[in-house]
Amino acid sequence: MPSRRSPATARLDVRLTPAHKELIEHAAAARGVTVSAFVVGTLVAEAEAAMERPGTFRLSARDTQRLLQLLENPPAPNAAMRRAMARHADSQRKRA
Image (tube, rainbow, N blue to C red; front, side):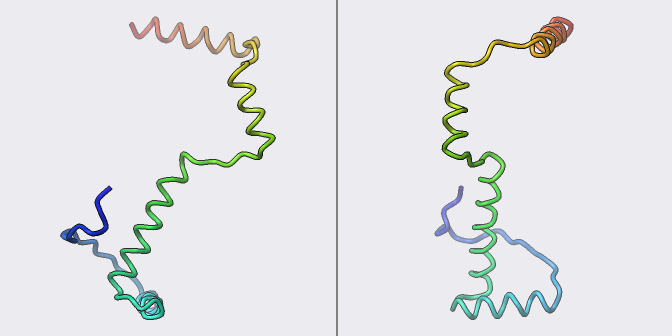
């Protein structure tokens, strides 16, 4: 990810309503920063958060222990799993 201190050379143009623009200007003023600094800081923080969310989930302590137990001692495949594994193996043979 680029450093936040690297020179800004790219542009991002957006269209927004006058009410949204005014709200953003007031929020930037309330923080004591320029509109550009406010917008870039907010967008970067939201983008970073959005990139973390797809691969992140939280488990309770109980569920974490259960997951670790299953990883260390996986259950034997049931009939449905055996059929799925057979279909997968068959599809791989057909591709080769």
